[in-house]
Image (tube, rainbow, N blue to C red; front, side, top):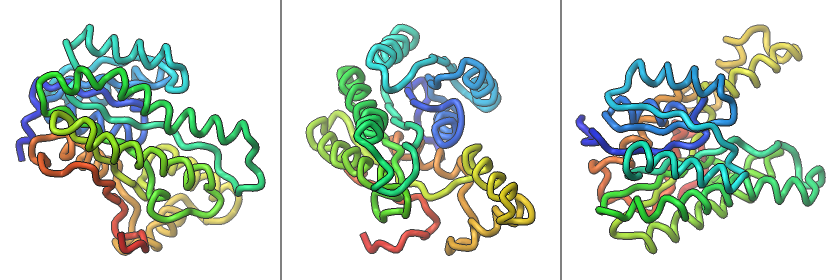
Amino acid sequence: MDYKLDGNVALVTASSSGLGKASAKALASEGANVVINGRSEENLAEAKDDILAVAEGDVLAVRGDLTIPDDIERLTDRTVEEFGGIDHLVTNAGGPPSGPFMEMDDEDWYSAFDLLVMSVVRLVRNAAPYLRDDGGGTIVTIASRSVKEAIPSLVLSNAVRMSVIGLEKTLSKELAPDVRANAVLPAPHETTRQRELIQAAVDRGEYDSYEDGLDAKGDINPLGRIGDPMELGDAVAYLSSERSSFINGVAIPIDGGQGASNL
């Protein structure tokens, strides 16, 4: 299916690895010029090479920390300088620390809000004029299934990510009809982070091997496995394309049916 993204400009944050990288890769393979972002120059260089291997457009890597307003401004400015505008914004950020409520202090809460919410606020504020420029702009926020169903020992993600979804819903109305805003809510996918968590469990003796740990993670999913990052990336590319032109203001679980919520 042709998503008609040739020559479009997509800015994808926290995209040097994981689901952000998969989203950038999917957009690049559909012909978009893609800007990727991360804090490590080395990781960004590796990600750029990997994406270029499938890209039909250009790829620009810009280092930056999403909790620093000046870095966000520089990221959007570099995108516009290089490609002349921004058609698609994919917001993504690393997860906040895990743990139960009583283990989190005020600094943990403020840091999580800054990372997950204010990064999106600042990105959209800077990018909105370009997204609205000629209509057809899109925003896709990569959040978490914790928005639909609280996950034990993830109080920060459970609580703070809800703000992002409220923001996304508001943007879907305030920026329409020029810009559509949607979110995706992933369950575990086989990212570097998930591989590290499984290997750590193997090292603790919880599983006999990585394969056993991976199978155990998949056993709780109706499809019998965890996701491939590109399955999430392909969903992001679809939501960024004209093929999804009547989808606006929704938060879509990408979880293989793992969630128990009816809505």
